[in-house]
Amino acid sequence: MSSGTPVWVVLAVAALGVLGTLAAAVITQVLSGRREARQWERQREHERERWDRERDERREQWEREDHARWHQERLALYAELLKRIEEWEGVVSQVLPVTNPGPVEVPEEDQRRLGEALSAVAVADSKLGLFASKETDTAASRFFTDAALLHARLSAGGLDDPQRRWQAGFEQRALADRKSELLTLIRRDLGMPPGLETRKVS
Image (tube, rainbow, N blue to C red; front, side, top):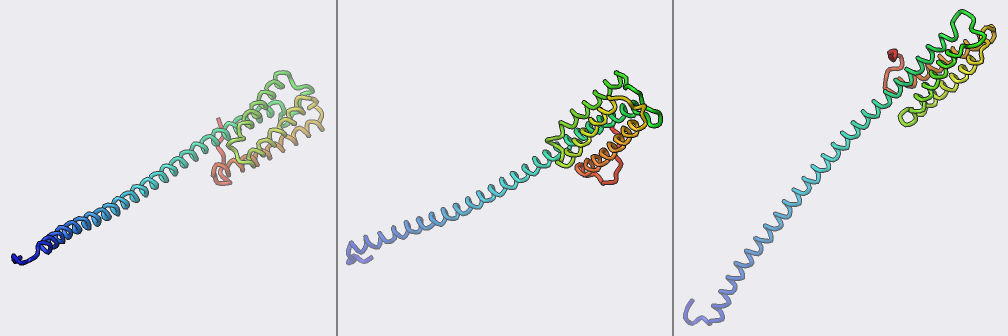
């Protein structure tokens, strides 16, 4: 500048230059901060989405595992019940022959075997509450109730009488219908086709 320029003008120009530089730095810093903030927000959003996705995947895996465990527990309980029912039926068929008249009095040993077999059915039935469907649980309870009535009739003896023998046979056949109903419900609960034969439980 010329020597005639007032000092305050020189200072003002210098101040404006400094202010311009500072303003540019501040603006650059603000813009950079905003850019970093947006970038950080995007990263946080990506992390949140990734965490939500992993959480959902874990929850689905846990649900699948819970369902598999539930299915295995239900399968084991149903298999146990069917096994005990078949054992009960085996004892009944020995005490109540198909063709010959029954005994006047059921031997004490046979009564003991009948009682033990029926008790085993009762224990298996009592375990169903938490895992069986309501319909299957009800059908199993009906089977046990009718089996208890047949047990009482057999234990009372007098099966040499044709009428009593016929009545016991009728109740035995009714139990077979109860079992068929129960099997249908079990197949449904386990996701088996309705007509699929159930393998004999060993």
